[in-house]
Image (cartoon, rainbow, N blue to C red; front, top):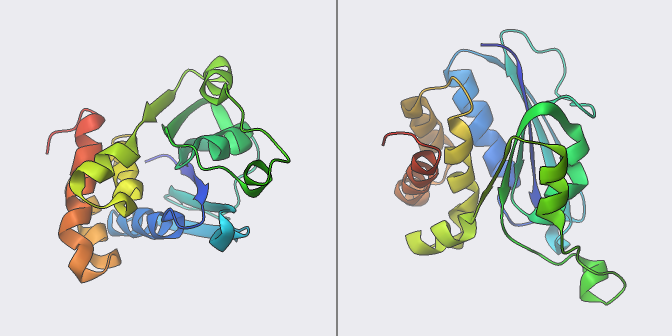
Length: 195
């Protein structure tokens, strides 16, 4: 497998850090070298959370520079717009179609942009938008939207589905494993995978 650079972006409380651990665990189980790094904003107050995951035969650094990400996995639309410049022109951008107002919008100091998806689609052809929140609601717990997104992203890697399942079993708390496996499978099916 060629080296793959993945950025996972979201807002505090959306499971960005857990997602990076699942992705990293799956890659290690598949026999790849993995480097990860996390950047926490005011995560507990709805601020940005960004993780870098680099996977390959030999990876020297977890840091992803502008224009280097192969995959941008976005749990919120404004975060997608904020980090889109880090994606290669040929990269894949997977966006959860959810709006979470940041503090400046909440207190009336700024307006949430209306045309986020149009701006991103105007720059990139590899854009996939999903209502992962709705899928998670259907499964009975909105906190699994991140794993729905992982399932969708998994088809963009060479890592087998069963390895992803093993990584989820080992990374997620035992009482939530079955729900997270269902969430992963929902995302995987949306990407055209067979469950």
